[in-house]
Length: 154
Image (cartoon, rainbow, N blue to C red):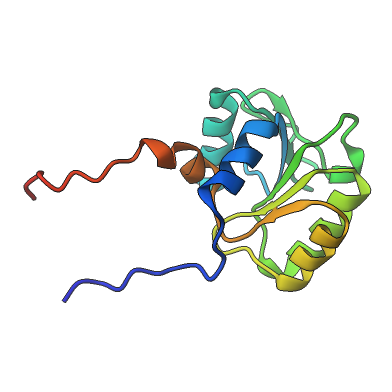
């Protein structure tokens, strides 16, 4: 019996996601890791190599840079405009990150796969931010290029 597909309760149109990914230039990644085995490192790498200006956020005082990019301890410390705040933290922390994203004037709050909080989404949306939860921008960025190949043998 095939495994059941795990489906997120948060649905977004491809137009909505595409508009966000085309409009943002600067992405602050809360929970960025310098560990190359972590998923957040891979997402940061791909988004950076795709042309986004990445700003890693990690409170570890020993972490000064990731891939040659300066690491900030908090969103409030960033000294430039932020278009999107991408969150690689537990869902319980999303509300606080949403508050900070509003304070710094971000336009988008994006919760990584597994990161969602309806109250955080409402707070951000009420402040005028676009919100995406439980999705990966790296996956969404390349989704239009994925075509099923039903003719391949296994």
